[in-house]
Length: 403
Image: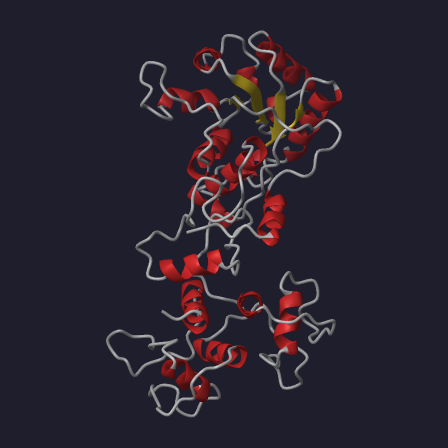
């Protein structure tokens, strides 16, 4: 699956990557490895990095005696240290740090995630200074510092400390600002403190966007050609790949790692799908009262200007952007958007008789854009069922570029 390297994807990538360089932040060096110092959350980030990136610039945690053993328990334990443990020069984590540094003499930077816990642990700027001193006893490469993201509730009221400590490192000239690690929602967390597989990859893309010279956010991240949740075995793999190739989808997360093929399509998302797929003309008219500020607002207005939608209420002043799109509604949207479809001469389904969208459903069936909703009963269309993102890909491809 090729990446759709459009300006929109590039802009979306910037949303999940670091901001433009500011005071205290400079572009990280390239051409070598990046060391890691942090905690179990850092392990989430680095694990996700190796899921989404082919560059492999981060220390990889290989057992020094077994180069084929990636992410062995010793290395995971090494990263599972808070600032309290790292301040101790006898912390065995430093032994692993030294081993990694020796294994990768081409190390050009250290990424330090500021892992602070509850205020009761007594974290101070002096503690940060002591840790950096221990790093400086080992290497003089630049240090890039990042706080924990603000998702974990295990921070117990101390998320601002990480920001304050990064400011301290920058303001005292000891290092630079590192990547911004994106906040996650509950569906992306494994527990109240750590990311699940999806969250890992989102965090990993943040890291890759900062340290990988040629990382391009997009399907599967910088190292993959496919969305991580759309294997080649997926029923709609070909259709979703077509969406990507034609710049019609950006995925369902800020990093562009996932497509969420089984999620329902909202009316707002549908507007953007159709707007991109049919390259609708721009408009300055604002048609609806309930989509102001919505990321899909411009697409919604273009869909309305093209007479593809008249809204969701009798007055025609509401669009209901968050409502799911039914299969019946989708038939009408696509029939109005498409040109050159063959009119229907057959009534294909028994479960749409008399509904508003029946004629449009039959047109889609006549043009082999839909084959119904049941492999066991070809007379069923399921007009009231929600359209999934996978089905949306199939509807669009069969309409615009049929096999």
